[in-house]
Length: 622
Ligand SMILES: Nc1ncnc2c1ncn2[C@@H]1O[C@H](COP(=O)(O)OP(=O)(O)OP(=O)(O)O)[C@@H](O)[C@H]1O
Ligand SMILES: [Mg+2]
Image 1: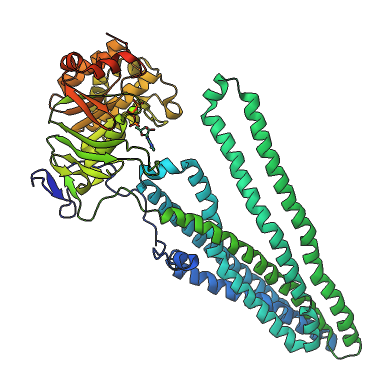
Image 2 (image 1 turned 180 degrees about the vertical axis):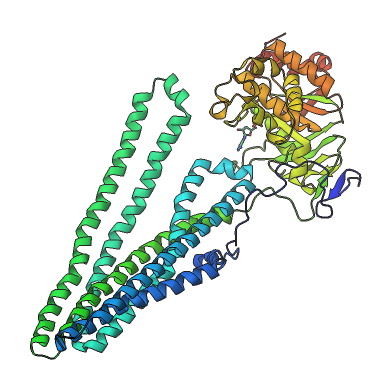
């Protein structure tokens, strides 16, 4: 580290970071636990901490469940006793039995209420925890990750995956509980009559096998259906956000056909799913009834022979119904487990993704930089780019002095935006270094680096909130005066005042209710308010007219005399405003000097300005 101590500070040592990071305090409760980071463990063990974090509540849930089940299982025994008493001594009173049944009903109600309430409490806490863990992780992932995956898909996938994991974690142990009721019931049944019990459970294996068959059919179908639902959602989503493109090409019919194809595919799999369920479910439900019939037959004969009481037979038939439930639940749970395994695999794909760009241990805050920027022999290719292709930047050297304004000029696609991204450390260089005030950006905390170095792009993203909130994005507590000042410098104040609600006007999604030039000026004001020491304007004023642009630069010159500014521009009028022009070609600096010098000495520069390949507005103002 070759920075001086006056410009960096230990990130861990002081409470006051010396700059104003956004959202210093956590505005949400942290998750109760995090998944086990050990990748060698199975998915269930990795997720278990989420459940054990709520072990007290979950323990109470289980206790209520066990107690409720025990009561439930004891009801037929009370019935049996009541019937036997009634039949035996025809005059005997059943009052005690009635009270017992009422007491059991009340207690079972209370227990089942508590158990369901607590169960869902745990389930939704786990869901919330998982959601914030995943979202937190998504916000930490680097640009290279978002270059690779569609953010919308990650979010929609995460939603259904979180749900299926939540279901398993919370309900899985309860299936164990219901198996317990099965064991209890069978115990009671055995105590009544052994051969009759064997007859009763004889149908169970068939129920199980049938259930297994059904799952083999249903599982892939439900998987396909889920995928097709996502497909439909994606078509709708793209159509809504791309509606301007669709309409401008009058491609509505084509898009409707696209959606209807997706919808039909969904209909097919959804119908197939219902069909499979419709064929198996009645069978699975009918089997225990068949068992019941045989029990009535055999049991009835036993009763007539006097080898078993009527009460016992009654209790028995209640149990037969009761034991079918855990079996079906077990089947459902096996299905859910398969699903949760697949889901957790996808969730861990995200959670195990290591952010490519992150604070290194011991990274230091950049304090009060003077704004000297240096690119030292930088080589960079985008991750995943063709390894045989030449890197975007190779041997790129550039020093920008504090307070200097430099224009970066070059053909489209030559790497100008890439330079800006490396400066803010959106990506890390492959070789060489990017230095700020002599500090390698990789040694600085991202928060402090991005506080001091900011960039405005040509396609700025605005949030669907008020103009005031949009400008104050980097400084949510900024007073209105500062906001107006920034907007004035960005030449936005005038048109904002003409809006019906002024600074409180809410812009449409992505700011589409504003013109391109207006959006750019709001974005510029947003960056100016954050008051970065180093400002990169990447085609930031390409959509405003030349006069307004000149006004902007005039205002910037007064306001930010000592700010280091890198201007990426295609327009001659913009380039003419800067101290120095740097020509970027084949990944490195081909020439550097004032506009007049380059024009006189550098034919390539003149060619680029004249060719129109420089793009949008090559001869805009010569
Ligand atoms: N996120 C990315 N992933 C992979 N390759 C990229 C990415 N962004 C840009 N590139 C490639 O890197 C090269 C340089 O792109 P860059 O955006 O820096 O060009 P530019 O000079 O800013 O062009 P323009 O003047 O059109 O804005 C291009 O060939 C581009 O295709
Ligand atoms: Mg660019």
